[in-house]
Image (cartoon, rainbow, N blue to C red; front, top):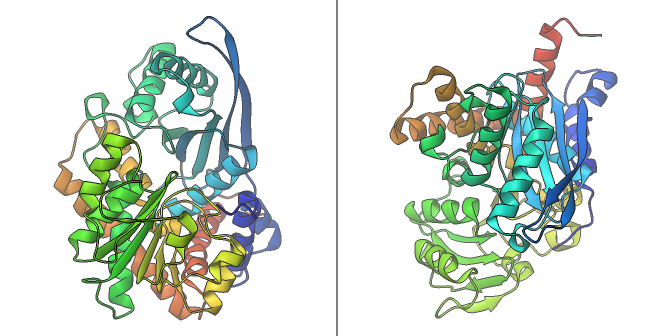
Length: 417
């Protein structure tokens, strides 16, 4: 995987690119390129053998002009301060592009969960929750799952917060299990918004998604859900990959069967009657649609020269470096950005938060219908900005829409310089 770009610098470059098309002062743009605050803490946690281990953890609160900070918590050995800052910034503009009333936050712990027992992970999670306690709250900062975290970790954090605060506050965190105040449709939300973005993209570009060839890099939750839902539209999933490598079948894979195989074996490798390929080979296949659904910086400027896909829908956060964006724009590859394509997760997290606050819960059909309405409206706004401003690509269009909305909130707050 390419690692040429610092993700925080990539975010700042994306903001600058869009700001060039907006009538906004430099000092305000500078404010929108940097977090308001970053918590950096060291967690001292007892292991099962009685030893004490230290874990570095972060929470970045990037911008709260449009509402409470919102964003996931990831557990990954590659977590860095700059990565968390970048992800929290992307969350600001993701929430703004789909027009939900949140700012942006993000958290992470430097840990490989595979190396620890469930009881150790619980103690790590609860230790982090204690550190987060003064900074989070239903109207202040609402965390959610991210890479290597899910309902289990969210339940632990919620329980720790409620215990320490001596209250019931299900809206303090989203992505919870249903029995703990979670929402129907949340698990599939990121993959569903990726599918909806791809569907709208094909329609806008006057192409037929039925029969289209598709490759998905990263076959975790977002990638596998996107794959099965895009397959349901009649597309042909010809390749998928995970950290172990990739598989390819020009005649098409069964997206659900591959997911079942990965659940059983831990990887997609060795799936029957397929050709083994590398991640880079998958990313450069001659296909109609590419869905990068792993980590940031998957495609750098050099690899972008070899990308043969016509359309890219980003299920991951920041999978393309700014140089890759430039190369793909020059080559007329249509990239539909992460801040739209994977915004389903935060959108349904918003629905979960609304349900928690009202103590009234929706059906899965209602959740999916509301999500589709929001993503389709956001796509239409992106296309309108793209055409109205004669912008170079759809990413810049998404940031033009999002930045203007954040600036409008900032201006109306009375804090305008």
